[in-house]
Length: 313
Image 1: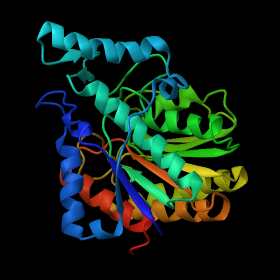
Image 2 (image 1 turned 90 degrees about the vertical axis):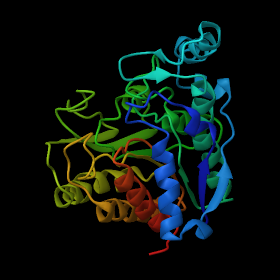
Image 3 (image 1 turned 30 degrees about the vertical axis):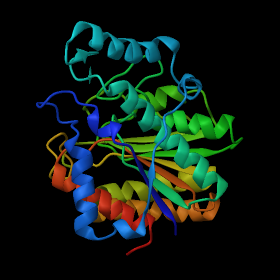
């Protein structure tokens, strides 16, 4: 297997303050664990290009794009360090470029897996994306990286069936909103509920399987819902490409949520996803970092995920 690892230095320069859990240290923790695990030689490192404005516009309104770009430009004029879009989502002088390269990583990985240049990819990127609504940033997220890339796969490459699998502790509300009327996209997820963003527990659409779970749900329960709910839907849908919104904040060490997953659970889920991808999608997977804020647990979980993607176990 050829597994590519996409990132860009600008993704570590986006900063929302020393107090903020979505920090540059997250990507450094992943880098540290890659070195410690000695798997770096087995993945192909690639620098993420920036996404085009045209690509962003396939998902986001002109106003949502301008909100980020113009306020970042305004920081240079005001001399302020940060601009708060909301209480949890701030901009600094690098946020625009970081957001472009985060979305660009997902698009470049999409192009590479569809062309057969690589088998699969992991995008070590920030800001994350799955809360970003078409009309506005939200919940640490500026642009919806996975949604932008999936729309690119539909419109540029002509794919007809794409699955988005979201295992973050929070519901990917922005992704669901972006594709609510798009039956070529199937979204499957679990998420702690009730919990931010306090939605997703309503009846799923015909092309989505979103499973709310209570706090303290452990790995055994998650494995059961994957087998009973996710996998039958994915097999019926027969996706030609799979995206993973890879949030690792359902880990038992992560204080951002109250779930009980460990590295072995993330590895097991990745194995199940890879089996579906092999059967219907020529193995094509693009995984993009979402949450995960306990730094050691994040790094270890990403390595467990990558080991399966690269078939190193």
